[in-house]
Image (cartoon, rainbow, N blue to C red; front, side, top):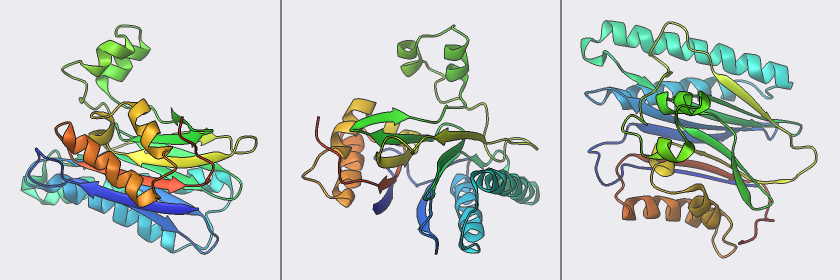
Length: 252
C-alpha cells in the first residue's frame, strides 16, 4: 500500500486555500483528508488548515479508530468541533466573515472503508481499473440535477455550478454525509480524494487513465494529474490525496 498527496496553487489564483494530508496510525488504519477553503484575505486557507489540523490531531491521539459505528461517531464529533471552532474564529476576527471550507475524508481500516464529505470536494474508489465517485456534492446544480431540473451535461457548464449549499463555517449546524464502501468482495485498487480544482479541469476518464498507467509510480500519477490541470488553464487550486491499495491497476 502506497500513499501520496500534493497541492498546487494552479495558474490563476494568487495563493493556495486548499489543505491536504494522509495519516496512518499504529493499527495500520488510514485517514485521508482534503479541504478546500473559501473566504477573503487568505482566510480560506486558515479554515481549511484548521479542519485538517484538528482532524489530524484527533486521529493521532488514538491507536485505532474502532468499529465502523465508532468511526462514524468520531467523524461526526470531529466535524461539529471544527465547525464550532471556525465560527468562533470568524466571530473574533472581523476580516474573517464568510470564511469556511469544504471537507472530504476517507477512513480505511482492515474491515471497512467509509467516506465523509461536506461541500464539493470529491471522494472516489478505483475498482478493477474503473474510477467511481462515492461522495455527492453539496452544490446548487447537484440539487437541481437530483430534482430533474438539470441534466448532468447541463450541470457541467452551469454558471452557478460552484455555488455551495453546505460548508464548514457556513452555519451553526453542519452535518457530514457518510458513505460506506463494500470492500468484502471486490479488491480496491485505489482511493482518491480531491478538491474541485481537479474535477473541474479533467474528466473522470482522464483521471482514471492516469491512475491506471502501469508505467507511473504513485508520485508521478499525482503530479501528472496536477500538470494536466495546469495545462488546461489551472483555474483553481488543485489538491489530491491518493492511496494505492493494490498493484493490480491496469491501463484500459
